[in-house]
Length: 590
Image (cartoon, rainbow, N blue to C red):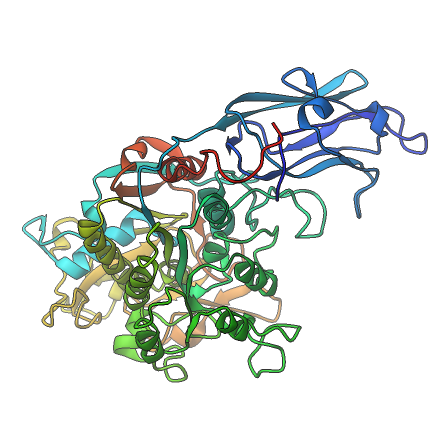
C-alpha cells in the first residue's frame, strides 16, 4: 500500500447486450462516514451494478475532477472476475491533509456519494509505549465471575479488585460489523487495528463482492503503521494460533480469516519483534509431520535467520528471554494453546502431548522485557484467546479462569507502567457472549435434581472457592458451592450444573442429518437436564452477543476513551497517542 489521495466513480449505461437502463455505483470503499488517518495508505474502489464504459464515469472529490486531485493512474476493470459488472480501483493511496472529503461518482444522472473524515494527530507522541490487551469474548459476566472466584466477596463487598478494575478511564464499545449487527473476532479486531469497520470474517480490508479473498480494498493495519512511521518495536502475544483472527488483525489483509497459511506469510512480512503463541502447524513446511501448509516454507528457519531467538517450550522461552536481541519467535503448540486450568490443574486437553507450554503471563513478561530494550518504545498486543474459545462450548469455569490469567498479564503491564509512566494500557474485548452469573450452585442442598440446587437472590449466598496458595486462582473449581453461570443462547445440550473436569466441554454433536444434537456423553451425569437450543440446529456452540463491550484504559492519552465509542474510534485514540498521523518519511503526492 502506497501513494496519495482518494477517488471514486460510478454510473454509466449498461452495454447493449444487457438490460437497458443505467448502471450505477452500488458500493464505494471506504464506506460513508469512514474515519481515515492522515497519510495512512488505503485502497479506493467503486463497484457498479452493471458493465459501464470509462468515459461514462464522472468522479469528483470535493467538487474537483478526481484525476486532478489524485494525480495517479486509475485502474478501470470492465468486468470483475466472476461478476458481470465494472469497477474503478486505486491501490495504495493516502490523504495528506485532514478535513472532510466528499466523493461523488455519477453517470446518466445518477450519483453515489460518500463522505470521509480525514484526521491528523499531534506532531509529537503522548506516549512511548502502547500495550493493547484484548480479552477475546470477554463480557461483563466474565469479569464479575473472575473477581468473585479470584478475590472472593464478603458481606456484599469484593475482597479485592482485578488489575483491570484499576484502569481509570472507561468507555462502552459498539462492535457491530458493516454487514450485521452481530460481529466476529476478525472484523471487530480489524476495526480496532485499522480504524475502519468491515464485514464478518474480514481482516484489514473492506469486503468487496469478488470471490478472491486477497483482492479486496486494503486499509493499513496497526502493525504496518508502526513500521511506516518510526522505529518502535512491535509485539504479538496470544494463547490462540498466531494466524487466528485477533493476532492476524495486527498484520494481515484478507477477506477470509481462514486463510491461515497466507496470514503466516503476512506476519513474517511485517516481522514483529516478538511473536509468541500457538499455530505452529502453519509455520512449518508441508514435509514436516503436522504441517498445515501446502508449500515448503519454513518460517521457523526464516525467523531464525533474521536473528530471532526461537522457543518451542516454556523452558526454551525462559532461555530466549535472556538474550539481548529483543527479537523472539516462540510457538508452543501446533494449534491453540491449552487453558490455564488444563495446564496447571486438570491436565486435560492436549497437555499430555505438549506438557511444557508457557502461559499468558509468562509470554507477556517475556514480551515486555524484550520489547522494552528498544529505546524508541514499543506497541504490544496481548490476547487472552481462550476466554472466547471456552465460552463458545459453554465451558464457563475454563473461561473464567482464563479471564483471571488474562488479568494477571494486565498486572504485569501495570507494574511496567509504574517505572515507565509514558505507557498507555488499553483493556477491552472484541465482542460479548450471552453469559450471566445468576447466583450459586450448592451441592449440599437436599435432593438429586441439580436444578433445585441453584440458588438465586438470598438463596445464592456466597461461593466457597479457596486460594490457600495465594496465586490468585482457585485451588479447585469443583467446590461444593460454586458460581451458577449460564448462557442465554445455546444448541441442544445437557446442562450438568458442574465443572467439566474430564476435558473441555463438547455440548453438541452432529447427527446423521448433519444437524447438531445434544452430546449424550453427558446424558447420564446425575441431575443433568436436556436443554433444547434456541439457535439454529446448524450451530454446535453458543454464539456471540451484540451487547456493548467495556473498555478500560490508563496512562497518557487514556482520557480519549469515554462514553460510547466504536472500535474504529479506539484506533483513533491510539493513533493520536502515538502521533501516527504526523509527517513522516513517507512521500506525499500533495
